[in-house]
Amino acid sequence: MYGLRETAINFQNRRQPLNSPVLPRRVGVYIVLTLVLGHVLMSSAFPQSAGPTSITLDEAIKMALQHNHNMLAARTTIQQSEAEETTANLRPNPTLFADWEYLPLGAPSKQNPDVYPGVSTNDYLKNNTEADIGLSYLIERGKKRQHRLQAAKDVTAQTRFLVTDNERGLTFATASLFVNAQLAESTLELADKDLKSFEKTVDLGQLRYDKGAISEDDYLKIKLQLLQFETDYQQAELAKVQALSDLRQLLGYESVSADYDVAGPFDYQPLKGNLEDFQLKALQNRPDLRAAQQGVTVATSQYELQRAIGKQDVTVQGNYSHVNGINAVNFLGSIPLPVFNRNQGEIARTRIAITQAQEQEKATNGQALTDVRDAYEGLRVSDRIVQLYRSGYLDVAQKDRDIAEYAYQRGAVSLLDFLDAERNYRATQLAYRQALASYLLALEQMRQAVGTRALP
Image (tube, rainbow, N blue to C red; front, side):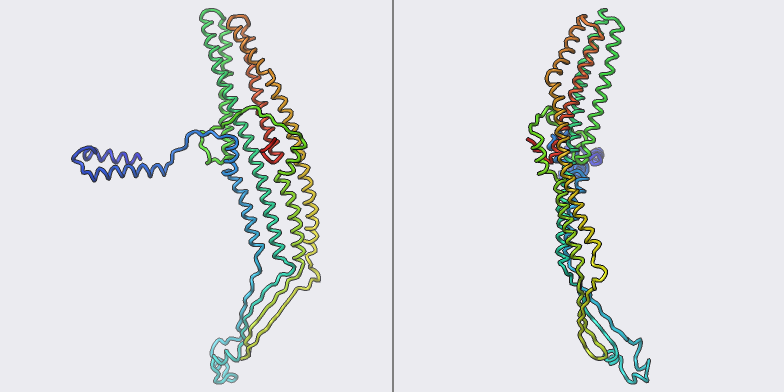
């Protein structure tokens, strides 16, 4: 764009202005079209970055599931498994073979005139050589191909459950980082509000000091306290930037602009339900439990496949032969004798693997119930803590700070009392936000443990 503009300006300096009647109309149109085309090309080559974007929790989860590169890589395992189904369903290739023996290196009548006097090369090839061409094919017994295909399909089904479980983990990680970003934003708002409020206190202290209402020592203590408010603000700002950066990585780095933000209520969300209902729902929804159950099916299909492999395959073969001027057809068949190798080891191993898969299913079932119980107890404790703050302690801290500030401005309390009330207010507000974030994280933990975001 700048190059084109500079060219146009130089062109105007050397010729006439665009609005000059001396300039031909056709040349003017050409310049305008050139500028427009250049603007379009530059806009497409260097797209403008999108403005600030605010995303909700549901939008963040949706973006992570669609754009997270690790998730996209995990989904390819399903496609790979489906490709293995194609391989498992393939039949053996037939084998084509041919040979031609006793070919002469020269004319037979010249190489051995005593044996082949006057015999032409064509007659020698017809009556004194041997040629064979044939086709062989391996016939699989025991329905090996069907068992291979079923085993591959069972593995694909298990892979789908495992990928779904990866999505469950990604959803929880995204929600956790989203809550952290909300906490950082709420903390930043509190720090900004406190900083502005205390700056007014410093200004009032300056005014009272100038009038001799307070000592220089008290004024310096007030001004020095401002450093803590400014430091808190800077740390809160850094925490928000880092929280948004970490969340962006899960969403897919290219899916959002660098100056995006989170949106949605950072507030208490009551949850009703008992432990037994949550555990029952987990047994119905947990994809890792479904994968463990499918693991038993996979182990069983592998066992049936190994039993089928123990059946010996038959190789059939058909040959056409030309020997010393005689044409003949041969048919052959062969089968290994299962004297020593009957695939006993793999059959025994896969039989034991079924037991292993069953035990893993029981362990996963117990782990699901344990996860729900741990999440439920953690949610109950976090809920009680949040309720304590909301029952009146927040109002008490606010009122205590306001009273101390009012009394200090009128000389009724000392500076230390006022600063102490200010610190208590800030500590209470910050602790409440952290308790609220802990509750929201416990709620997300419950959703992950149950295996669905739709809770009562």
